[in-house]
Length: 355
Image 1 (spheres, helix red, strand yellow):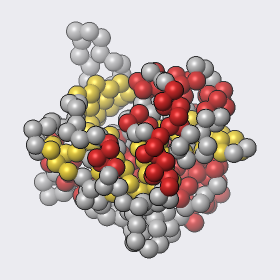
Image 2: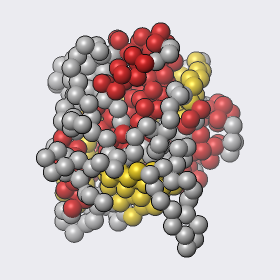
Image 3: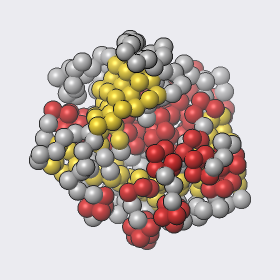
Image 4: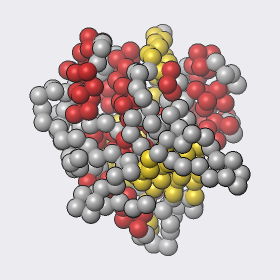
């Protein structure tokens, strides 16, 4: 399969090239994904995986997804001078992500996450040393982008306000461990974001309820803009102003859900920038995230437009997805993307760490 090194400009992206569509800042990890396992290994036991992927992770998942959808993306992150750092840098450049605001750090090691994934869920083990610079320094290089994606736990309300004052739409998420340690400082930050998109587990930890609808109702009192609660294979809920919508997930044979939440975030944000309404933004995000679960490997499982149109052609409900025609023409030539499964790209394509 050909390696996609660029994407065709589409209405999801800004018509003029004066500013990037998306700026993302934060940690970039090397994700080693073991997919298709029947069960998590018990202590002292070994299990075998059906597929293996080695791909960029962390904030790179949002960046690659948006770039594959045609957006101009700038990523600010720290990269180590090791083999994993080389791989991450080269792969992101080939995916069309602008790394001019990123830096490489001497004496630091690339964060590594190992994901054990079945068809519905994944478990993670992560190694990450403290970074050489914090989010403050990375945000200092931020261009005036149409939208910004940031981790809520690592940014202050003041910084969020500055990003919004610069005209950027701010999407923030939160990891489950931060949600578990929820405190008033995070609540203050929520008031300064445009889109908050936790998954159902995180939303439950933040609000003290296992009911996604009840969690959505609680969170919408704290967020000035849009709240999305991602419910995995069931779909997603969203509220904006007085509007509340539910959109079911698409039916796919899932292999690996690693990174699907970040892929959803990128697609939802791109749809919002394209001025789709809330229902269709959710539908688009569910579609892109759902298609990603058919492949192994977080960022590189994100679909390209060629895959979206193949799915659309074969869909049993094409009328419900005619809005896709307003985002990109199926007649435009778009190369298929490389996906991070067991067939690692060769040295002639995107350099990878071979198993």
